[in-house]
Image: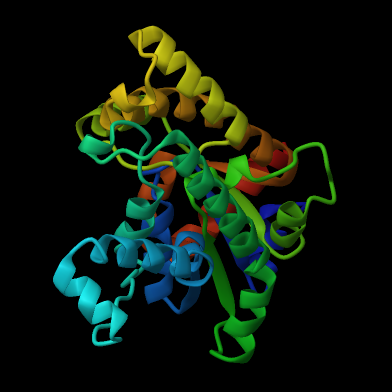
Length: 288
């Protein structure tokens, strides 16, 4: 949604906001603060993990359990139950399922299996984003929430067709919510990269980008056999490419369909009033 002025946004009686941007800019922190102030919080990653990826995650847990004789026996006799315990605060089962490609002795997946899991995540993310209008309705009709905030994953920018104004993800978000890009500072980008080198974690890649990064990594490291790839080293290498790839995409989304607030501005928000004033100011800046 677009507004002629900040005042028009402030007068909007039932607010619905989608926040997006790279990891660590404060999306989830804002969502939790608003949730405590009686806004409905919709976490895209939580929805992916509990609705669209749950069966895949649990099936993988079962494959691992079947390698242990005792657990194999108990599973086959339906004597134990295995489930994923994803919460807003703990999305580890989803990350673990995505994994990293490379040497199996170091926990790596074959590139084909890694790409398959990436594709499953993409499908789940698109479906979870398209669910936003439905959950705006549920939040109001079932739970009695007047206001709604959608906390997107960092890969929102990877699942949009920028040349299609009828793209279903875009329509689901722009028809019913105002899009807010929480823009990272360059210092934060450098901090993210350094943090990721120390503690690599699974990430989602656009398929074409993943192919390029995988090829470039092996060429630069002089690796021919996929099993010689250090999964963590590849993750650190790929993350730098990924973060730079996403920055202009976030900017494009904000320029065409939303508004920008700076990471430092978002960090200063303490109340709903602070949040709404921040968005109103961003709308007025964009209006010129």
